[in-house]
Image (cartoon, rainbow over all chains, first blue to last red; front, side, top):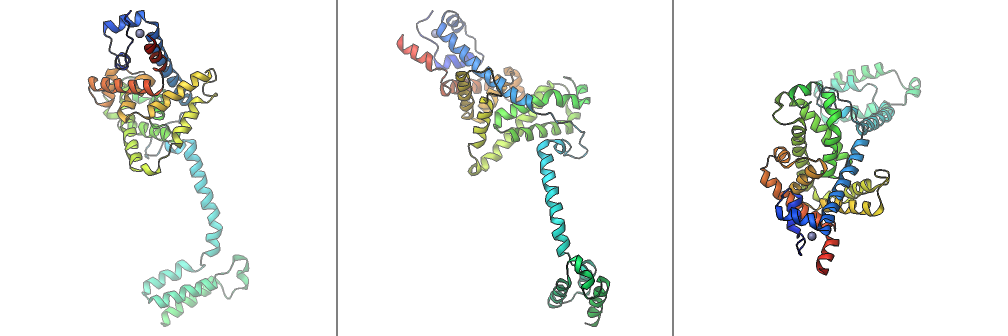
Length: 160
Length: 184
Ligand SMILES: [Zn+2]
């Protein structure tokens, strides 16, 4: 056995796959260097087995041939929760949207656009619609029905 | 499974190779969620490119090639967002590996050494780390690594040499020997 142990470069070269005869001979006869090689090997082996334990514990997604590019993504738990959260937010937003939705909006706004009225007139009409907008439960108390309101809006535009 | 025909059963390919691709991505990115995304993207790309797989390399090498490219892109984009990066994901991954549930039989000192090696690999340049992980975690030989990374065998060996030297020094594996060196 040589008096000099493996230096850092010799050790790294050995672990990188170089197998010079003199190092092989030294390792054969040197408990200290052999212990270092063993220590390194067991450290990386532990790294491998720990990473494997984590990866093996992962649920493997079921592959659906993606006619759409997001086939795989659709079925992972993380994405499932994200989609569920997004749906919940949309569902929660519906009552608010309903509450603020102008009852006669699609019809009259389209007519307004077609008539190409000035901003001032448009503003007035939107204001009028907003003031007409009452909660659904109070609708019977409001003046006229949605159809009446539309009819009035149409008439007022035609008059202008 | 190693030939083009093996891709006909793509479900089987995913089941067999998912853990490997995920493990490699986890070792490279140190982030479970990013590793999952990389694994998904890897199999989606493989599916899309399945007609181009001629079986010249093994399926494992082919999938790892895709994963290596995805991880490289991910690391690049992370670098561009360097101000957002924290050591949080690294710490979380380290805790995960050293968790008693992950490795119940491991002694405290072994756990410490594992943490030291894990931490040491985080300091490696990207290519050195990729070579190190492919060699010691994925158990690939130098030629397979060269094919996977599109490098020569000599370049792979040089990266591995530097990586081992750094990990040995940083993880304190050399410490005990060095002391004995000095005493002799
Ligand atoms: Zn020695």
